[in-house]
Image (cartoon, chains in turn green, blue):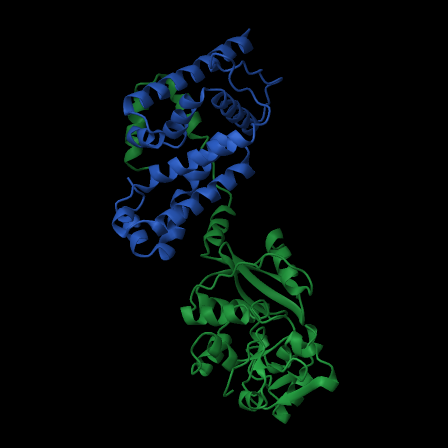
Length: 280
Length: 192
């Protein structure tokens, strides 16, 4: 930067006043300029979130590719699709993506805790730049659904106070940059069917099965039109996968096709899984 | 003075699109400065990373007009120097001659035998200079490094160190004179 720039003039002026030995010393000092390691610039860009690295981790339904930068986890993809992943990543985020040997220890620990049943810990940070406020609200809501449970798109829309935005919720979940980690697979069709998943419905079923849900049973309930379970001892109705619904024994369990039917029977919605209070 | 005068304007307009250019343009100064302070390359790289990360977040928070008017080189050098000093405070430097009580460099032993290999000789000279530099009082050392190792004009050295230009010139002069004196004394010893 100052090889031939204005500074060298200044520099030389100094040196002119120095006798032979002094000039040698000044040259020696200037020769101490060190070249930065080639790893410096890429590391800086990753830390500020202008470039990403990815690793493969053990996911619940097979290996999972996880991309990250200094702002957080930025993308996921099913394992074995490294080339396609990098291509899609660059097309969507316009940032370089490089494979990393080892994930940062804290990130690896947080992802493991997140994916392991019964383990608690700080959630990983996500880099959700490029998503809208509504999309982030949908993704935040999806993260409230406990492992192994499902809620319909309409539930997410209702919880956000926008009951008419069911399709928008579906679209937002479809744009989830970090599937599996942000569990958009726990959101299902409003009729209860396991529809719509960016990585294919079989992958969604595998994820739910890995979390202890029974995808076949969920599909059966959907086909029969069963939306809610009720308990004739508490007179409360729940989504079928709600922890409270699962505690009700067969003898005390009723099924409802909608909130209206439940209300007509004198049942109130569960305060934990929060099914709709009337038409649903 | 900037390598590309319009970089601050472009950073103000599009930080993400221009930040890599800032890193590439200034990484040699930032890393080199950090290395002369913390001495360990791995630590210097971390200091350099921290410097640019801090710079990025600062630039992201400043008003566009402020960014466009920035003098990036002295600004980055100042961040790097502060972070390097902090790091040095947290971790005492590895055993190497520093200063004795009155700020005078301790004597550095002459190398055992002169190597015929010219490259090895140059490396030895370099190492010696690094060592002598490390032995200067901090204020002098930082001024000498900024002025003579990194080649910054006095006005920028003064800006980085937060001292008047006259003071900085005195510090550089005293630093260089002491380096020279130590080198001469050493030559005397090897000649005898």
